[in-house]
Image (tube, rainbow, N blue to C red):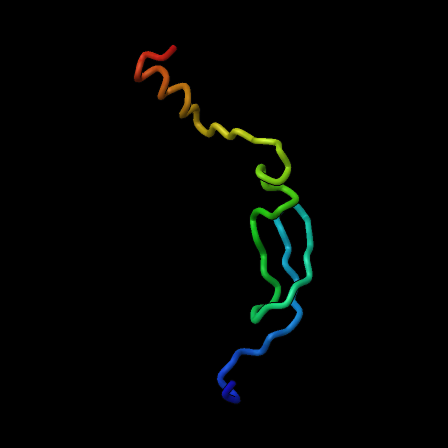
Length: 66
């Protein structure tokens, strides 16, 4: 590898919105994420359905599904 062209690789902390904290190696410092393996539905097996503003009800009403 050539000298002085690669970013510095160091330990950093990744913080999820759910409160989980991971320490990994990265070229960035203090990364904040919204979802991780502790809170993602694929890994937890629990699915959260968020219906903001009644979109599902409006869809059903519009297409006569109710």
